[in-house]
Amino acid sequence: MDFEHYDEQSRTVKQPLYDYYAQKAKAHTDITDGYCLDVGSNGGYFGLALAKITNLHMTFFDIADEALQKAQKNIVEDGLQQRATTLLGDVHAIPLEDETMDIVISRGSIPFWEDPALALKEIYRVLKKGGKTFVGGGKGTPEIKEQIEENMRARGQEIDREAMNKMHGDGMKRDYDALLKSVGIYDYVIHRGQDGIWIQMYR
Ligand SMILES: C[S@@+](CC[C@H](N)C(=O)[O-])C[C@H]1O[C@@H](n2cnc3c(N)ncnc32)[C@H](O)[C@@H]1O
Image (cartoon, rainbow, N blue to C red; front, side, top):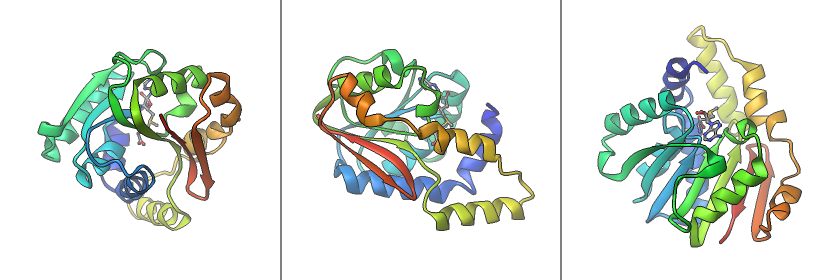
C-alpha cells in the first residue's frame, strides 16, 4: 500500500466520507465518552473524524508501522494529542486486556483480515459491557462517492476501482451472520445499504 498517497487523498478529497461515517457511528452507537479503538486505522481518518464530534479517547490500531506514523502525524496536525494514541498489532490477537473499550470502529479493513470470525471475536473480547461496535466498509452515499470522484478527476488523480471494490465491494461480501454466530456472538445488527455494510455488535 502507498501510505503517502492514501494519506494525501484521505486528508483532502476523501474527508467528507470520514465525516459522514463518524456522524453515522455516533448516531448508531450513541457513545460519545470513554475509549474507542479504530481497527485498521491507517492514518486515523475515521477515528479522528469521530474524535472531533465526541469526547472519546482514541486508540489507532494497525498492523503496519507506516500507517501508525501517518496516524501520529495526523493526531498532532488535528491537535488531538491529549485524546489519542497509537497501537501496533494484529486484529487476530489484539494486544489489549478484556473489556477495555467502550466502542470499536473500523472501516475498510475487514477484507484484509485472514480470519474475520476470529478478528470479530477479538473485537468483541475487548469491548466493555454495554460497549458497541461500528465496523464495516463503504464508499459513503452515492452523492459523496460522486463528489469524491469528481474532485479526484479535477485533480487529475486516478480512481483505483479495483482497490475500492476489494475494500468496499466484493471484499465485504461475506455471510457475517454465520461468521458472528460461529464465534458465539448473537447480539448484533448488520446494516446493509447504499453506504456499505456495517456491523453493530452489542456487549
Ligand atoms: C484500506 S486501509 C483502511 C484505512 C482506514 N480505516 C480508512 O477507512 O481509510 C486498511 C488498513 O487495515 C490494516 N490492516 C490490515 N490487516 C490488518 C490486521 N490483521 N490487523 C490490523 N490492521 C490491519 C492495513 O494495514 C491498513 O492500514
